[in-house]
Amino acid sequence: MSFATTTLVVSEAQGRATVEVRLNRLASTTVTVAYATGGGTASPGIDYRPASGTLTFAPGTIARSFTIEILSDDLNEPNETLEIRLSNPTNAEIVGSSVAILTITDSDAPPTARFAGERRSVPENSGSAAMTVELDRPAAIDVVVPYAVSGTAGPADHSLRAGALIIPAGATGARLRFTIVDDQIDEDDEYLVVTLGTPSNAGLGSPSVYLFTIVDDDTAGVTLNQTSFTLTEGASAAYTVVLESEPTAPVTIELTPDSQVAVTPDRLVFTPANWRVPQEVRLTAVDDDVDEGDNARETHAGRVTHRVISNDRFYARLTS
Image (cartoon, rainbow, N blue to C red):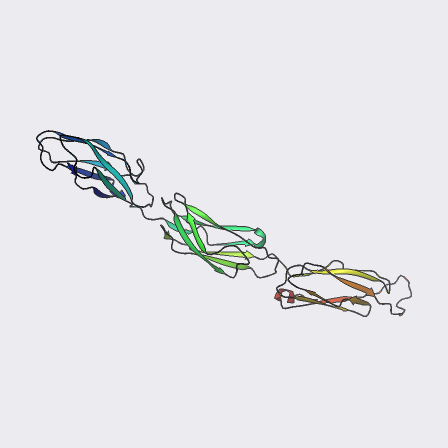
């Protein structure tokens, strides 16, 4: 006796497989043989219902068969195999292999991968960010989704690089996480575009493009630590000047006093390297020997104008 064929194929959607065992000739006495399922990549109770029993060939019977119930799990998965064994024959011998291989082909369509949303805006100082790629249903195997990164935000603005996101078997999504760089530079809002490529073990759904906007939180500006002084003629005082954000080009501040005061120095230069270091200005009230009031306590005003010059367009917008 032997299997009618030792290689069988059944679709998951068919629901059952029929296995036939044949004698090479008619027997005059009853012949029996035991059969059982087990082994292979298919999981009992998940991919098939375990089966075992005894086939009996009455005299004059040349073939007998049994069925194995195939279970549908609604998961996209690779083809799986099941081993079927014959053993303990009576009044006959097993010829050839005592093991048949049943291949269960998957009948479930692959899932579809897509972004959970289409756009998002976050402040530059948020530190970290993420976007979700989701499946419309889980798969029994890992889904690999490649992605590309483009946009006005570059490598200095975030840590996201082109690559591939893995959605593990059984999961319905995964997060694409990255860091946002808070760079202290006054600049336009920047955006990055993440585009999904063709996934492995899944189809590509919509939306497949995600627009991520990084909202700038820096402002170009100049800070004077003190802006008002009361001095007698000939006396001096000092104040400091510093920038409020990192410039992309040197920033020159020209100091122009009126006739009532003098300043040293008359020019300050800030660069991307020293922009946060305060620079000192010495202010002196001019002793001009001019009688400028009969009241000893009468005061008169002096003024220093600060003019900002820079090729950084945000600092260039500042007025005196």
